[in-house]
Amino acid sequence: MRSETRSRRAILAAALLCLLIPSASLLAQAPPRSPWVFSVDGGGLHQTEVDLKDTEGAFSVDRWFVSAGVDYGFDPRRSIGISIGGGQSGYDFDDSTVFGAGDPWGDVKDFRVALPTRFGFGEKGNAFIIPSVRYNREDGASSSDGRTWGLLAAVAWRLNEDLTIGPGIGVFSRLEGGTRVFPILAIDWNITERWTLATGRGLGASQGPGLNLSYRVSDNWSLGLAGRYEKVEFRLDDKGVAPGGIGRDQSIPLVFTARLDSSPKLGFAVFAGIEFGGKLTLKNALDETVEETDYDPAPVIGASFEFRY
Image 1 (cartoon, helix red, strand yellow):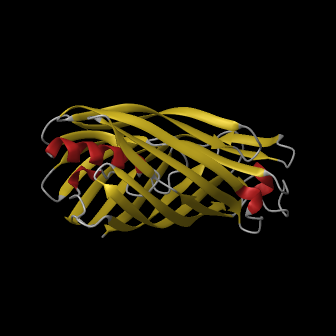
Image 2 (image 1 turned 90 degrees about the horizontal axis):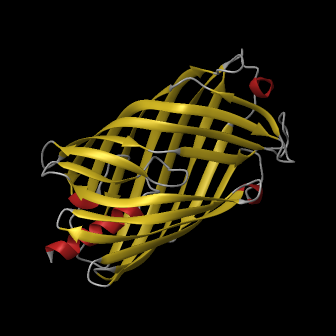
Image 3 (image 1 turned 90 degrees about the vertical axis):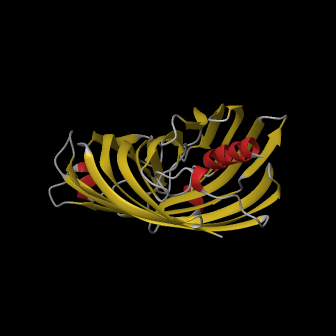
């Protein structure tokens, strides 16, 4: 029973990687008694003002994201669910900015629907499939013009009592056409009684998963280090320097986290770190690059919550 429960938690940790708590591993959650599981997640992040490297100017970002979902478990190894979430990223470019004529874009809306499904095979295997549809657009742009689809899938095997691991793949469409394909890793590894390495989640994560290294300080508190690759694309409105074009913000955030699980149903987290390798790209409606610039490492701070019942 113990090994079956650990295997189920490992695949859940990977299957929920597009949600919110940056340092959460589902190892700490007790298995639900009811086949129905309802969830609400939310959080916010502030990126402090940083300079653009290849042109004059600076910018800051405030993000928030909230999602709600329901999952039905047919048995301990099979379930299907739906998750609906939305949020906003508010970009603020200072008066000295040259990129995008000083105002490349403003508030960016984010809405998504996902259908997570998991099932077991054999004695030690589990798999998940998460199709999704997303709408990323600047305020004022059409939702349909910002629509993309995505698919995350992976299989994992319980190798022993402390390690479940397996390969996966992410497939996402692009606003400008074409498809992006990348590998992912589903892992739940109890390195010691207190140290854990697991597939991670991010605040309204843009696409694939990251990794979380966490240390359990007590039954309720844990500290961690989380990293991932973020790439957000969104449709621009028809009034800016690139009407109907595409904006892109990509970076590699690395954050330290502190998490409190006040009960098996409720968790809170705070995090702080740096976004490395940041780049902004502005394209016109013909998918031609108008401008592109790197930006300095960007400090970020934020908080999130998770409620399940």
